[in-house]
Amino acid sequence: MQAAPVRPTTVRATAIPSFTTALRAVESLLMSSGQRTARRNAWNSVLEDRRRAKDRIETERALRQSVAGRP
Image 1: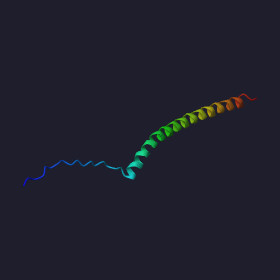
Image 2: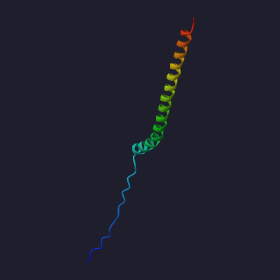
Image 3: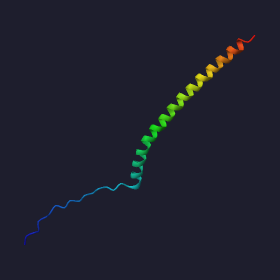
Image 4: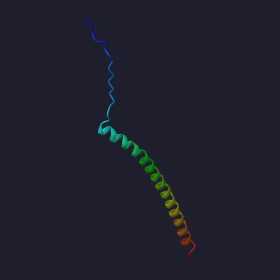
């Protein structure tokens, strides 16, 4: 009696990502653009603060000159 030939069986183990893994992947995609927006907003805030500081200094100078120039 002869044994039946052994056929190689291929088992494909494709890992199905867990809900947590999928959620983290989506979060990372969203956060990348979110971080870009946050940095842009932060930089705009810095520029606006600098502009306000410059305006404040100019106003203080103008007030000092107007008070000093008064008889």
